Image (cartoon, rainbow, N blue to C red; front, side, top):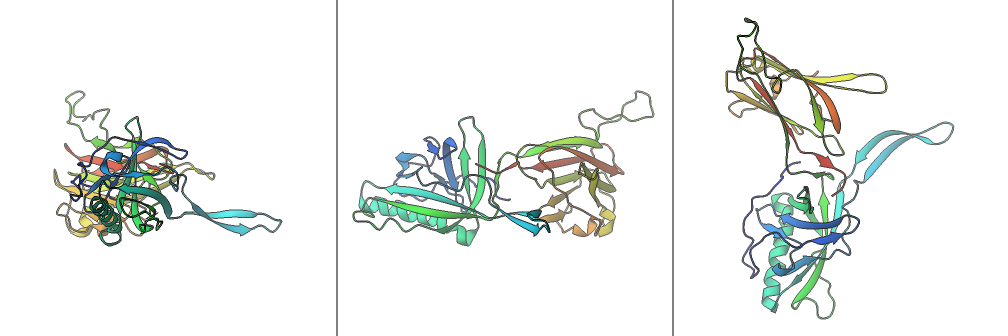
Amino acid sequence: MPLITAPVVTPPDTGQPPAGGGGGIVLPDLGRAVVTYYDPAGGVWPLTTRSLGWKTLAEGVSGLGAVPYELTTDQRARGGATLRHVQAQPRQIVWPLQVRGDTHMQFIERWRALATAWTRTLRDGPGVLEIARPDGSRRQIEVIYQEGWEGRGAYGSGWIVDTAVMTLWCEDPYWIDPVPVVVHREQAASSSFFAPFPTVSSSQILGATTVTVPGDVTVWPTWTITGPASLITFSVTRPTRSGPVTESFTLNPSAVGHGALLPGEQVTVRTDPPQVRGPDGSNWVGSLNWPAAVLWGLEPGDNAVTFTLAGSGLGSAVDLSFYPRYETA
C-alpha cells in the first residue's frame, strides 16, 4: 500500500486546540485505542480527543475485523465443492463522528473543515486511518470517503451539535504496521587470515538467509541493491504439498546498456506494483529476466531467501524492506 504516515501539519483554524494525541475509545471487540485520521493534504485529525470539538461514537463503528473474501469453487460430482480461488475484497468501515461547538458558527466551522478533510480523498487520493494501542503499537489503513456526511436531520441537530455516520472504502483491505521491517546484508572487508581467501561478517553475509515476516498475510518487499555488482539474483524457496518450489528474478544492469553497477550506485526494485529504478531514477524494468522473472512476495513466518551478487566487492549490499500486513485493526 502505499502512503504510511501523512506529514503532520495543523488542520484549518476552526477554533479548536492544536491537533495532538491523548484520549482514547473502547472499540467494539477490539478494546481501548487512540484513533487518528491523516488527510491526503497532510492534516492530522485526532478522532478520540473530545476537547477538540468532535469525538468518535464507539457504538456503530464497524468494519475493523477480518477481511471479506470471495470464494470461487467448482462443484464436485458426488456433492459439495472444491475451493479453487480466494480473492480479498475491498473493505468498508463505518465510522460515526459527533461534532460540537460552543456556538453555532464554531460548530459550522468544525463541521465544514472535517467534511473537507474526508471528502478530499475523492480528489487527492486516500487518507490514512490509524489505530494506536496502549502498548505503543499502531496499525494503519488507507481510506476513501464514500458517503454519510449528512448529519442526523433531526429536530435540534445542526445548531451546535450533529453526528455523521460515514462509510469509508478501502481498496486495500489489509491493515499495515507503519514501521517497516528492514533486512540489510553487506559485503564485509577482506581479512588477511588464511590469505588470499576473503571473509565476510557473520551478521552481514550475502547469500542464503531467513527472513521472518510478522503479520497475517503476504507482504511485497522493496529491494535496494548497492554496487559494485554485475548480475543480481533473488530467490525464495517455499514448501508445498508437492515439494519445495523456488521462485526467482535476476537483474542485469547490462540489459539496459548501463554495464555493471559501480561502487555506491543503487537500483531499487518494487514488487507491488512492479517497478525498477536505476541509479539516475530512470526506468530499468527491462533489466529483469522477463518472462521468467517472478517478483515474489514473502509469506508470514520464516522465508528461505537467497541473494546472489556476481561482481560484488567491498560495499556491495542488499536492503530488503516491507510493512507487515494484518487482517484486523
